Image (cartoon, rainbow, N blue to C red; front, side):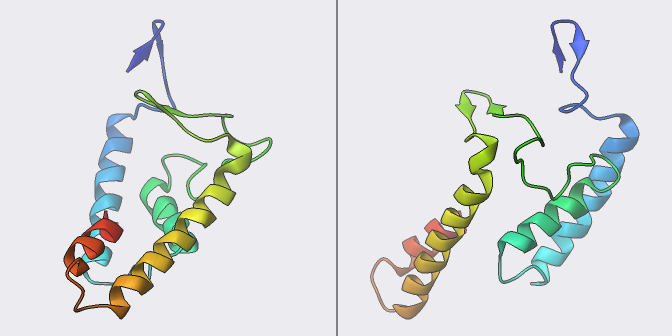
Length: 122
């Protein structure tokens, strides 16, 4: 990706980095399929990010926070929360995920069970 004729080194990778990312993604995927990354947690998510980007980006596994990282990130038409809110937002998401998972696990005979499980997985 080129922005204003200047290569964006944060969002582009060298051929060696691409290869390293592919190998590390395969390793994380293998562990995920083997059930080694469960239960999902904030620390587990950070660990996966660290494993994936190890040796490629030094921010791997770190939360954006004051004096670290861009204030906002842009993903296509979407904009992230301010870096000062990243950890709070992630903690809120995980609390909601835990409540949702507990709810559908406690009600396996509910008509909306499969839909609820799919919703949590997504």
